[in-house]
Length: 141
Image 1 (cartoon, one colour):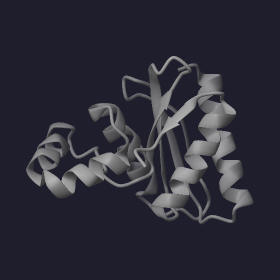
Image 2 (image 1 turned 120 degrees about the vertical axis):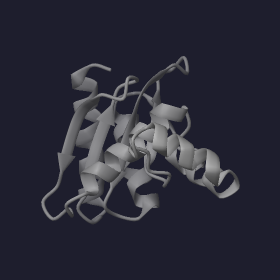
Image 3 (image 1 turned 60 degrees about the vertical axis):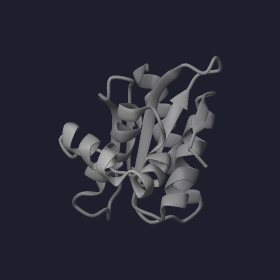
Image 4 (image 1 turned 90 degrees about the horizontal axis):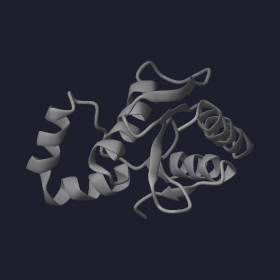
């Protein structure tokens, strides 16, 4: 994922959050390797919101499914998700707000993780950012 694309996704997600009067957010855009391409923690976010945002996106990249789906899987296969969390060094957060980013052909190009408001609102902001970059959001909903 090009840096400019990651910046567009991040900025639009932040703009959507401010337009909707969401709580302060931490927003992380990762490439397919799990490397952070863009990150912001708005004024007023708590200390580990950034870690949660990265964990949502990293978990989605790690398993190839949105963090919402990982959370649903955790309810059915708790030991599996716990093992994956251990393998990833605890970087995986199985809660909605980690959205896969795909191009028009369906190829995975990265993920965004957002934390700070409700998980549903985190996803709304994420999807707005992805759409602004002309890409497709996969939330698992």
